[in-house]
Amino acid sequence: MSELFRPSRRIVVLGLAAAGVQAAWAEDLPEVVATKDPSCGCCEAWVKHLRDEGFRVQVVNAPVSPVKVRLGVPRELASCHTAQVGGYVVEGHVPASAIKRLLAEKPTATGLAVPGMPVGSPGMEVDGMEPATYEVVLFGPGGRSTFARFRGQQTI
Image 1 (cartoon, helix red, strand yellow):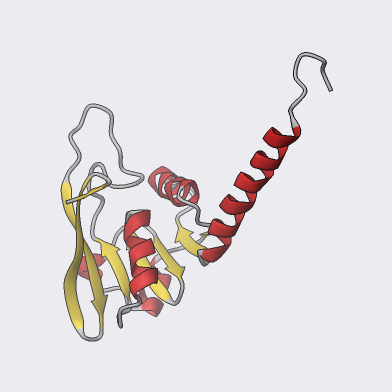
Image 2: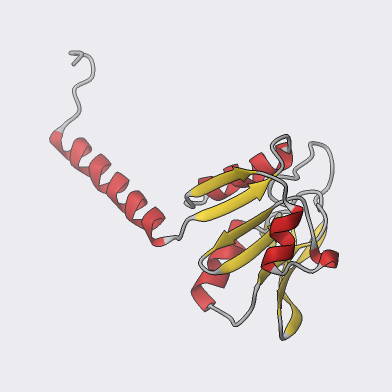
């Protein structure tokens, strides 16, 4: 190790503790399995958003329509990718904070959806454009309701 930088025992211990806390936090979140078209860049950006928020994400590059049908995503709630996490379906550009809330509250539902591709939602950021206001929809056999409202990635 360089003589210019020799970390103290305290720095090493604090660094290992911080890494352990981050690893434990990530392990508390279930893995997300995201199915997307192989050429979709906004889907990759959404996956990066989830990973940045502590989720482990497995990406499946495959046709998405059969997955949507199998998982019961209503046509009018469809977006460009479909994911599964903790027994729920996540359709489209749903912010990680909404997914974490879903997993904590465990409502009786099929899952969450952000229909379409709203500008400013995770993965849909566009330089120079104001983020849209959009709803995250909770859906299932019992119907649909607004789970959260966002402007870009901020809850409103």
